Structure formats: structure tokens, C-alpha cells
Length: 100
Image 1 (cartoon, rainbow, N blue to C red):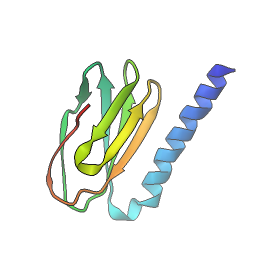
Image 2 (cartoon, one colour):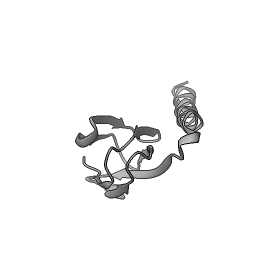
Image 3 (cartoon, rainbow, N blue to C red):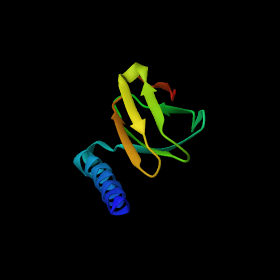
Image 4 (cartoon, one colour):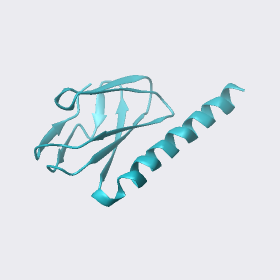
């Protein structure tokens, strides 16, 4: 039963990410896949363009992680086996540090 619930939850998360892409498709959204593992994110820094929406699709390779982008007021929990989508719209073109 727990396995069915976990699979259903994962399916809803994937559908949620797809919905984000469809809803903002007209804005040429940039999708970046990020992986988390013990004390590191890959990539650990990305560059974004001013005004271009960015969706970070974050997955954990090993355990629960916290994810934070202080510059954008973003905080998310990353759980193993799930994809967490974080959407931002940068107001400046600058390197965007990915911090734990």
C-alpha cells in the first residue's frame, strides 16, 4: 500500500511539473535539471537571463535535502525518489548560486 501511495505521489509531482511547463510555455521557459547528493548540488552554479522564467527540476540521489535560494526567497524540501519543481523569474542576468 505504501508503494502505491509513493508511486501516486511521484506521478502527481511529474504532472505538476508538466503543468508548470504548459502554463508558461509562451514565455520560453528554461528548464534546468539539478541533482542533489550528500553536501553538493550538480550543477552548483547556473547563469540565468533577465526576465526569462526558469524551472529547476530537482531530484535527490541519496536522502532528504533542503534547498534554498536566498536571493529569490525560495525554500524547498527535496525528497529521494521525487522531482521537486522550483520556478523563478530573475530580475537580473547574473550567476545564480545554488546553495544548500
